[in-house]
Amino acid sequence: MSIPGSGYFHARGARVDFSETRRISELDKIAAAQTRDALWRIFESEIARLGFPMVIYLFRNADGSLVCRTNLSPRHYGPAEQDPFLKYCCDNLGITFTGPEYLPKYDYIDDKAEAFIARARRSGMTTGIGIPVRSRREPAYGGFNLGTRLTRKEFEAGPAQHAERLRTLCMVMQDKLEGFAATAEPDGAPKDAGRQSSLTGREREILALLSTGLTRPQIADRTSVSRHTIDTHVKSIYRKLKVHSQRELMSLRSAD
Image 1 (cartoon, rainbow, N blue to C red):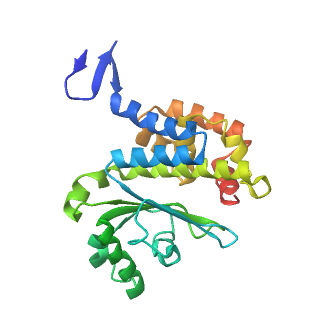
Image 2 (cartoon, one colour):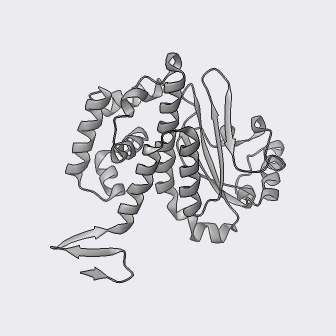
Image 3 (tube, helix red, strand yellow):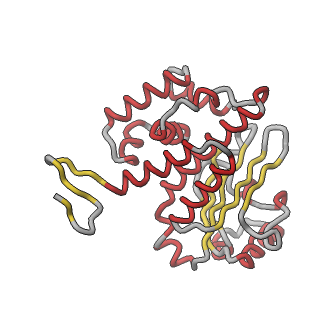
């Protein structure tokens, strides 16, 4: 029996959440991408659907080189080396609200960084969310800054509420990017990248959450599935990546 407007239906006493089905589909689309270009098209489309039409990806490799991809106009963004995201948003894996609307909140930002952020307003980016996928405690670090054209009030009442969902998407996106890098550059590849290609979309999601330090009960709560199901997925992840504990898993990924 369906419940109009609720996003749920009941079948034999089971309560099925269509929003969860839709969210899994986003991850499956990313996991199934066969090329970098296709991957970015899918990612930007899914992020835009969640209310974030602007994307900045900034990542500092272990050799010091900087990778940057953005759909902002070069007239309003750059040079990437001056982007304060790596300095102010990557000390840990916490989420940071970004954009000119949040400048008054961060009085520790220096004048140069403040000017860089203020220039982003010309592109229409007024609010956003910074999501690091690797922290500065690792040899390579960086992440995503996803932007909107909304006021702070509109942003917090709307797209900002997708924060944890976005974090998972970004973590899975990073894993996929590292997988492509492993294919192109086998000598400098992440050690587990080839094995990760065998993970399902759901396993990639759980791997991303495990990598943030979440416990299995916390992951079960966040993904709205049973603890038993999470345990089954974790066993499969460990087997495919040839690890035996969450600590070993995190050590493997921090060594990438």
